[in-house]
Amino acid sequence: MKPNRGGDGSGSTSSEQGPPYYCKVVHESAIIYGLLRLPKIFGKDHGESLSDHVRLETPNGAVWPMEVMKLEDDYFLNNGWPEFLKFYSICQAHQLLFKYHGNSNLSVRIIDRSFREIKYPPKPTRDHVENVINIESPKRKRNSLAPNYVQSDGNENDGGTMRKKSNLASSSSPKQETNTTALQQAEALQSKIENPSFLIVMRPTYARNYL
Image (cartoon, rainbow, N blue to C red; front, side, top):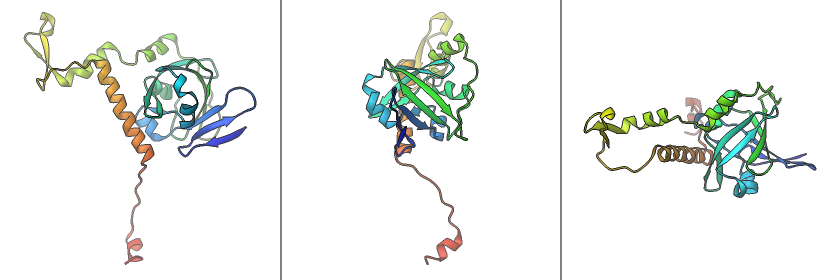
């Protein structure tokens, strides 16, 4: 197999038989933001055939549904990804090897920091996977609106209405607000990847050499 790596630590490995593997190195940002940007070359090869949801299957047969979000030419794994990385204890510098099988179905292998494939835990229960599909419960969605709304014209049990604190009418639904937040996170992550920054501690001795 011949590796082909991109500048972001991702790429593909071509083989004579079967579809190629796409390699993605997990960066800290994928853990902090709860979003995983798929390799650029994967998006170029299969982006148009992806639906807004994919199914990720591990070698032991566990299937994880995940939401896909597109931002310009980038594709991100969104809802379902945080639960996946937590379940398999995925950390920074782990590698994910994706293989696309069509119809938004992917297989994935997880490589740890010692460059060994992990030992996959038993399959999650069906209830666990269904909870991943319904990432936000109705209760959580209602609570996410609490800081922005106050009760008026009676109480909730009496059929009182809700008004926004800003007194401005809003037609946005919890789903729309969730999508907006995810989009903002994706934009922040995209900017962080394309415009990386780092800190250097300057010692007095460094400065004296240039005075």
